[in-house]
Length: 163
Image 1 (cartoon, rainbow, N blue to C red):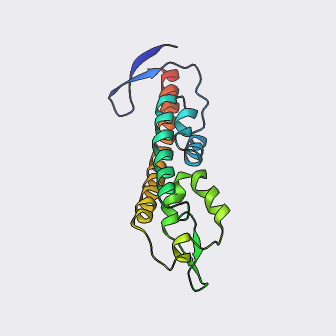
Image 2 (image 1 turned 60 degrees about the horizontal axis):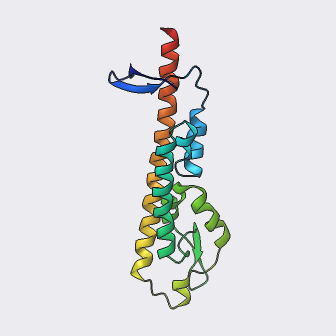
Image 3 (image 1 turned 135 degrees about the vertical axis):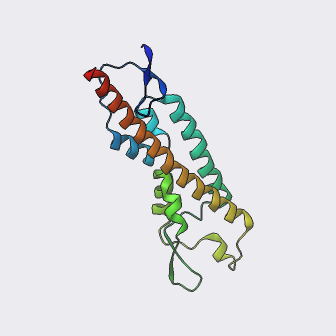
């Protein structure tokens, strides 16, 4: 494995790994990064960065999940009166990928714990919900970064082959 400096598309110097062929698909990097935090970076060869994002984002989401007792991850819920309500917070949580979709699918239309106990919401549940929402939004940015890096590497290697 050899490394060399190369001018980036924007003109700055970048340390790049020399590869003969780069056959990574940028959309697949985004999809993998969305489904499992950091997996897009691992797919394009940035293993350390991918593991860092996996531990950081998944850890943040799971800590929020713990604070909520696992009851705040669902796109909808039944309120105390039997009506179904949408939970717009799930739009942000869904950004973490499978970590949000699996519990949401398992919970279905169950009534969360705080409504069974008379509608009192503990402050830690709100904090846990915030942690899960932030980790979901950040994971979308990390997946987008993996996509952009895959596109950049593809363009840089194409440009190098022309020279």
